[in-house]
Image (cartoon, rainbow, N blue to C red; front, side):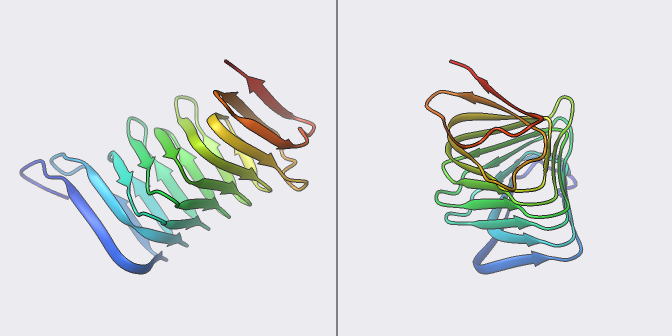
Length: 178
């Protein structure tokens, strides 16, 4: 935390992977933007309490435990060629989550988009092959693949030049907008 003056703060791991088995808090301090320039394997807890830009080019991010995005904050993933896999545990979005130009996979656990929370993907692939999605996923120019094991209820809003591959299962809703 920056205690007295608003500073932008960046955590960089130049090579390899940061494995979190403890608690990682992204806090506001006195203000400023927070930048995460690393690949992450989360097996612990990540609390995002400030706006965060995840900027690692070709970053590989896997959540096996708990990531919480606080209300009123926005987490933006922009690292070209990167991936985010929701593999287990919960990605709890009370604020906003936005990802562009990479790939997102939901293979297990829970993607929980709460009341005022937003989950928006653009210009990328989204593979839903398992786990649970609570709330609406907003997809713009996204290739959505619903795999044979992606059968839990889910809601998707597809806009722009999005495509759908796979079947829409019982309890799933796909809204197609212009």
